[in-house]
Length: 287
Figure 1 (tube, rainbow, N blue to C red):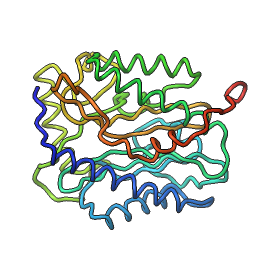
Figure 2 (figure 1 turned 30 degrees about the horizontal axis):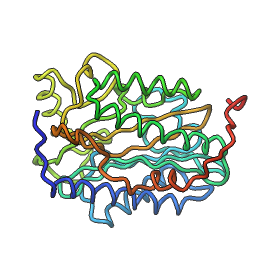
Figure 3 (figure 1 turned 120 degrees about the vertical axis):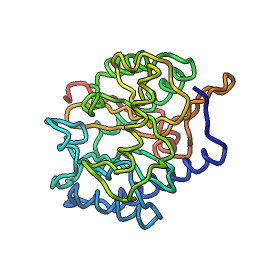
Figure 4 (figure 1 turned 30 degrees about the vertical axis):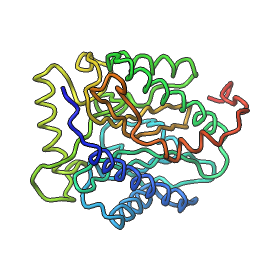
């Protein structure tokens, strides 16, 4: 499959992702004890619309406390923002997927309110997954093998895999420029109507070629990374603390540059660069 995005297309995807992160950062700075997940998700949607977003790949999500690790999630309805209130020391995750002129972003922003040494340790270790995934994709390893390597790193760190709780156990999925007809801003079951139309076509097309636009650990992901853009979201947990990043990975058909992260100027990447090289491991005996 050929890579069919121009440099201008890539720049537009980057603009959508930068807007998503800017809005998530603004909401993160606004959060304080007493705010509910529903209020945070609503604030995130408001900021995105104010930034020019007219449609969504999926509605914004917000998870607080043990819900950042998807503890006690039993159905897809559990992913929607709840009445859970933020408390001092709690971790949070904000997740949004705006569509800007058809260009889709899908991002995850993790943080904490107040001190949380467990979160700090998970955040530091999370950087290794970003490096591992990029190197493996550049080496054209099958997607399900990369998933297994991520699992192995999670075990090595002493954490547990939380992206397996997502529908389909996905660690990622392809995104495209949405060109489907239909009303913008209308959602069904949390997904944009135009997104559902696009995903349906992509699933059928990819399956006909023995591929899947969903990146999981099963048979359908036993193929090398398909050229295009992938929203990748390794999600790890330890006890009641969960954390992830989600950002776009560009997979090309160029053997000299087979894959790269769409943008390195992102909040989590900057924070990793600023971190002290010394951090006490607080995981032992803290589960």
